[in-house]
Length: 289
Image (cartoon, rainbow, N blue to C red; front, top):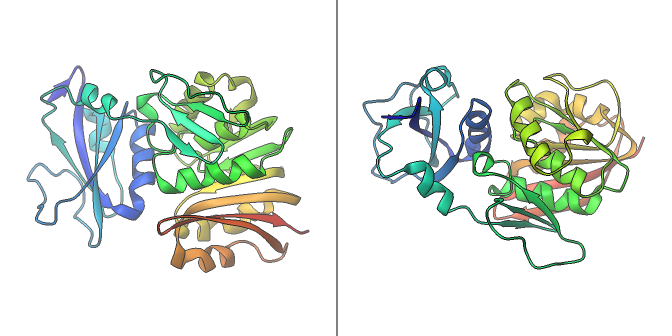
């Protein structure tokens, strides 16, 4: 089951966690992550090496990891199993990658030709090892769409839970002067730096570790699940300067009010825009004070 010194794994997880689980796989060293639906009759495989399955809608993420990384993988409610990569899974996966449009941003693999010229089009190059967090998931597309409209030239940007760093890089390509990424997984430092380098903005991007900096920023990006926003909402809000913009996504229509409540109400917020893609939502808000 090895591909060189790597193995191919499947992770079955709640559909609402798919982007974050995929980002976790990437920062653990996966060179590609693909998503597919779980067949209703599907049963857990005897090769499972993770915790038990959760209930509710689920997806399967397929990725390549080292054996050590596969055994170190943990995610609540997720199951990881090794699979046979017969047929060249990695090469097959590359063939299915397509450009993804998100407002004025277009995310494309580097081997696909550039899009026809549009005056305001911002192209973000992402190699196949960084598929998730790059516009393939609804929440990422929504955040890219909003930052394309609300990031201004010269802005200082903070990307909380940056993962692959695609939002920070998108902000830089839209005119931001500097972007800083933070993530609880230190592996995000390498992944996000690679994405910044591939897009020619490495000199303007920095990874600051897992703690939210004490400085304030013109724009703060937070693409994460609602429970995570509830955990760090006050810190996120405090990182937005007065008059600055918060762009947050990763939650569903029925969770919007929970997100609003989680953001520190002491500052006050003017709603700028709500973006939607199916049941997924993202918000842009301006801090009043």
